[in-house]
Image (cartoon, rainbow over all chains, first blue to last red; front, side, top):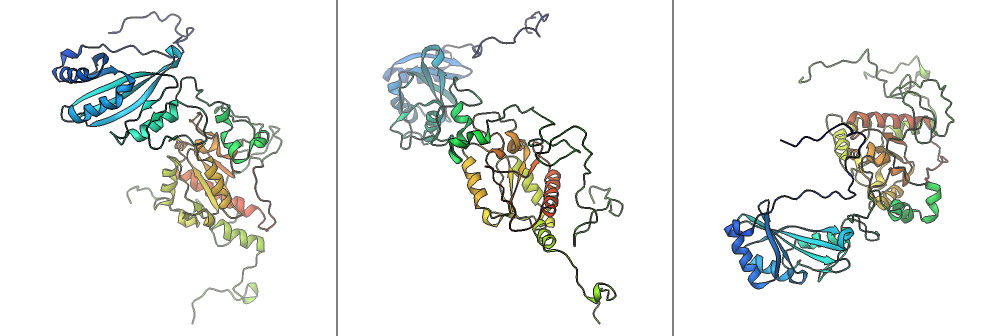
Amino acid sequence: MRAYTPKDDVQAKAYYTDRFYVAPQVPKQDVSTDPVFAADLEAISAKFEVKESFIQVENMVIYINAKDIYAVLEFMRDSLEYTQLTEMSAIDWLAKDDTFEIFYQMLSMNKRKRTRIKFFIKNGDAVDSVEKLFRCADWSEREMFDMFGIEANNHPFMKRILMPYDWQGNPLLKTYPLEGDEFAAWYEIDKIYGKEAREAIGPEIRDTARVDRYDSERFARLGYEQPKGTKITGNEEPTVQSYQEEGGVFMVTKFDKDTSKIIDDPQR
Amino acid sequence: MAQHKVNYTQDGGLPVALTSIDKIVNWGRSNSIWALTYGLACCGIEMMASGASRFDFDRYGTIFRASPRQADVMIVAGTLTKKHAEFIKRLYDQMTEPRWVISMGSCANTGGMFNTYATVQGCDRIIPVDLYLPGCAPRPETLQYGVMLLQKKIRANSASKAQKPKRLM
Ligand code: SF4
């Protein structure tokens, strides 16, 4: 059961204070608790420097040096049966110590085990591409470049993958505002109509709940619709809602509810 | 003997209907609104459903075309991302006039729930829109109603060649 916390002023208090909420850590076990992982770790640490290693949620996590990554993944693929790179990306720790944490999630179908290789790089450093080992790393590394600005050496096509090529900024950085910076806000206007059109088109309206019944340019009150640009006084006559003009259109009969047949049986 | 139903005592005995050019042109236009297949996200599924047998858009003469050059109305069905914005403008420019735009769903109207850096906050920032359909996603009935309102709008305006082209700026 969860420990009881007093709920006297929960409404008054902010429910969190940390700007970037730090999730509680799952307990870590020693690698020696799992014989398969222990053997793998021994094989890796015999050839490469392993800085830290533990088991977390049945995943072995190994911290290595950034320069070893290609060799480690090659060794794991060819000798340790970790034949799949299921995921890779970066974690933004720039606010803490100006570093990125890069992780590679490996899967061994034969051993039915998952291992995560991790390392830290300084902001501005590049990683070695593993695209030659795993084709899937091609797009993952491009995504990492797009979202975090981390380049991969020896990558065949180091370009943005999700955002347009002429985009500025890296959206997955924690410093990037969710609603976009100024470049993002005016991107489509600048590109299509040019900067001088900014004034004519106006800024983005991001308040999705905004409704102004006196603004007939953007809103129409249901049942009291007026032509665009009319000055709304609030004493408008109701407008009749109908699908078609009275009397129908040439060769198209107007729908009449009384003469229509209503089908009760939905299965008919 | 032919079994036609011409009433020779009316209309001077001729099977003739008198109307104005405006009316006949608008009648033709409003009953053959060809739509550009423009499903951008989940709303596109509802647009496809409207075209399929249960809702059957063909009855209105609304036939989906895969080319903007053959289309009269662009149904913007889905989330318009900033990356795609230039293409919607290009496709809109390729449509021949007169042309209309239906903005279908919250995303196309205002950006909807995607209040983010990557989504255009309403496709009317890029192209002029005639009809906004609310909903996430609007049901096919809403789109049907929207098409009928568009027909009504077409018939209410003059058909003359001199009609003002719609421009955002
Ligand atoms: S309005 Fe809703 S259903 Fe339509 S594209 Fe947006 S999220 Fe999807």
